[in-house]
Image (cartoon, rainbow, N blue to C red):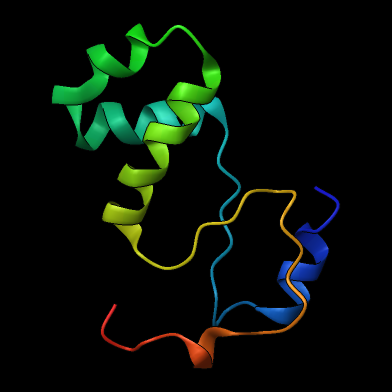
Length: 85
């Protein structure tokens, strides 16, 4: 969570929404909206497999940006991203 404050400073709310995903909230998203995948999700041997797969569902469901907690933003780069993605 070291860089979480930096993200919030460079990408301020309410223009940007910050969501800190936990094991529980990732599973709830999949259970609620992608129930067909839940048995696969629960069947993974390692937590990192669940986290890696949940990223795809998060991005599909919400769009936007996804960054791990150890990623430090140096500046707001939103304006440099393609508008059609």
